[in-house]
Image (cartoon, rainbow, N blue to C red; front, side, top):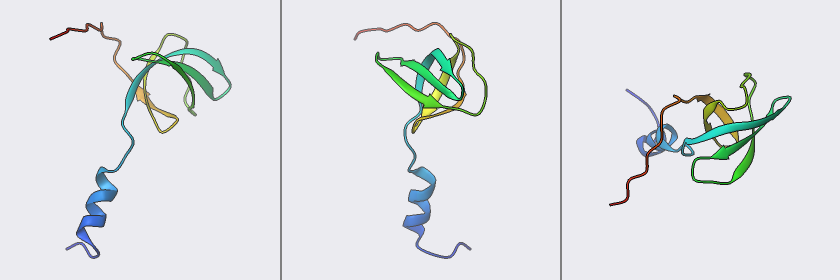
Length: 77
């Protein structure tokens, strides 16, 4: 059985920044400029290599993985 405060253990598992979808628009070494899905640009880092135009997931200023290159459709309800 786990020792320690169960609430703190649970928070450690669930408290992460949200993953966001972005598109790589520029690369300078390990720094990447990306455009967020909702608009706006930001600079993030990654030790892996990505090409301009790649879709990626970012979290807390880091590229965490590739994202599938699927079409985006917005539906207003």
